[in-house]
Image (cartoon, rainbow, N blue to C red; front, side, top):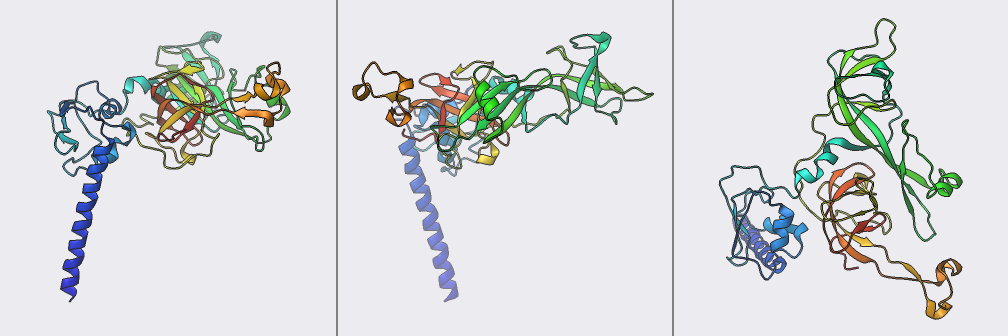
Length: 389
């Protein structure tokens, strides 16, 4: 009897697995575009996102669809020269190529490499050692020159350190019960302290701490150096010989230990793990001090690892619908300022494009705009990539 039950159990498991593969095959077929070719040869310079976008209705689901095919050993690793076949029962099958180059990534690393290497986000930096002076009392120093660091009493010759500069403070002001929360990007002075501007003045002065949370301080790496002398013989600063000819170092820059590779090099697009509360996930900033971005532009996002976000998470980006004055009801002469909030009409959000996260921190992240139908701007809302509105 036990043997019969065991054979029955094994048979049921086999039927179940076959059924799952059948369902997965039909699901893959449903996601394929109607004009897909019979085969496609992966080329150098391709990205996973671009390849999936040619064949699939939703390119961010390519790993799930390709994993439905048991003949693919690793759907994440596809190389130049591999042949993708879509002719047999609409199933995606990868035939190995010569495998001479590196595997295809989801995005070109060249588009995000400066942000992977040179930018990071921390909760605070006041405790970090800092540059207190420069060789010959210069205002700026670069490659081959010396910087003097305070706060490294145990530094030894030969130790390597990176010089970083606090550039932005990102914050979130919770305005529960009002129309919307506020997200800020504040410029920092040479000490790393926020500079007041006319846009945020009243918010910062009237409600400096009430309901406000700092999402992070952006640190930009400006140089790297080697300790040549520690705090010895009554000297109260360590000597750092600067190695790079990039950005110049100035007084107030901070010092951190060199991390050889603190970031991922492979990214696999996937939908968010959790649904974010509306209004909580926003575009904080666009790279290079801009307010508008398009495909292949980097944006800072107001959510991070604590919100379930990881590298590869894909969001759709939406222009937040306006609160418009109903001029039919109030008259065409009424301005927006003279109509109460409850008397305005909330218009629909407007789809702008998709963004994929490539660097995740605790409270915020960096993403790359993958595609768009209109520019992505600061303040735009992030939603699930399948959100219909």
